Image (cartoon, rainbow, N blue to C red; front, side):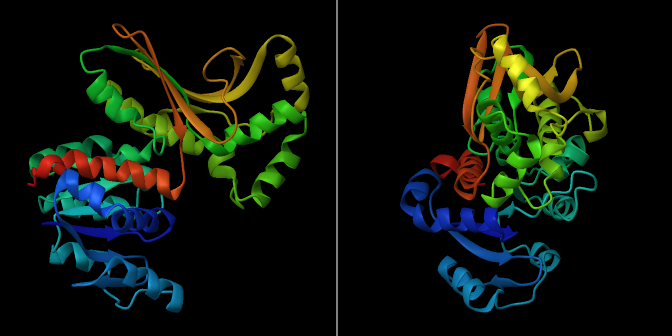
Length: 331
């Protein structure tokens, strides 16, 4: 029996919990029996012998879970084999997730996270900590949502030299730029409409200034190229100065404009608006994410998919769970 503890019960955490409940038969065929032993958010928790639907009921009816145990207490008690860490991202401090992950790894327990912050702030330290204590850390959900970018490079492209990665790693900016291209409307208008639709946040800076894409690029650079770079090492320019006139000129010449994140084997780390040929696979539309991987043996490999959303992120978290405990190989 695999015991799962969850820290974080926002959109991503609830999506993961829902997937565990609804897809139990499918998942248990791959990893064997499992049980959620604790769920904790920033203010409340539920532990012991409970059903996942009880957590949802408490949140919907009372706005909180029934207990007051903190994440620190749950981790200290250690009644779990793997911690699912889905707290909000802070790419500058990594907290609070960084502390939760470190404590768990030091106890020799596995961690699966969707939180970019800890990986951006302390990637190499976390990898060494996991190795030192015989634990594992899965982070497929930190980049590209449901797109299996990290696993594809690690497993399917094993033996290839990765020469360069170029990608669209933020769906909000891609949606805004797509509509600016099609409608020739100004950035403030499209941003406002994206906020009304819930595609852009009330404070959109994390997306439109390129911070989110830069954080994901750091994780890719460290995991793919074996580096030890941090957020401040990325050259970043956002999309706020792009105009409809720029799109008119670009399209006339057979190009569009997209926010492209790029890392290569020579050390390049950049997020910026780029001209992209309309025939290029990266000229994608809407909220999709995509990565073009250039290799020495396989040539160019293109991955596309939904980069955000509770179901998509749950898919990536579960894929790490299967990686760790697949075929009943628990422990």
